[in-house]
Length: 208
Image (cartoon, rainbow, N blue to C red; front, top):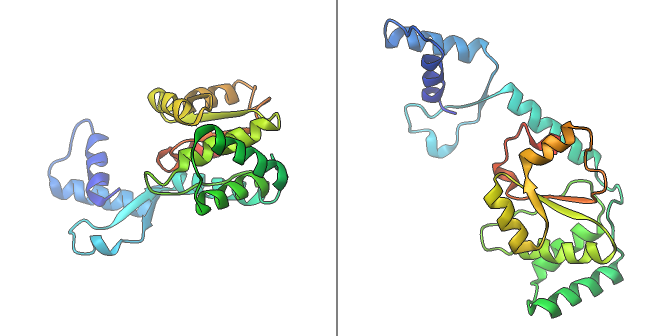
């Protein structure tokens, strides 16, 4: 958020208001100096703006660090690994069944998903890059070995879209977190696909 966003939050938090903008500015300075605030590097595109500074909160940075630690600790755990021959056979069957031809880059991502065995993987690409196709092919390969694949999305409509496009039974992130909090966790589930992970609240990601 920008300084202007922090100022707005300060104003909203004061039911009786302030005497003037100078007082609001002074309170904002105190929040930025003493509150749970972390200053972010100012992007070059914002250096010419009067309120170009950007901030986040310590709970966000703590959550991001937790997510990174979980991902790093999960490197090379040999989870949901499919041997190369079986993976190639499953991918060939997927291409024959759908009439799609995966690109070299898509095949490389699939090789990593199916063969590297990391606990956490990120598939990053612009819209239209074929991420959904990659996940559909991966689901087909995993399910060919008896693994259970499910999806999670930020909203019910997005979950329905993920299910329709990739063939992965999906629910909202909120419903998965409710299940986890209830003690069931992810028992019986081998792979959880989080759709559009970049827009998920950072404080929720380490819980998934």
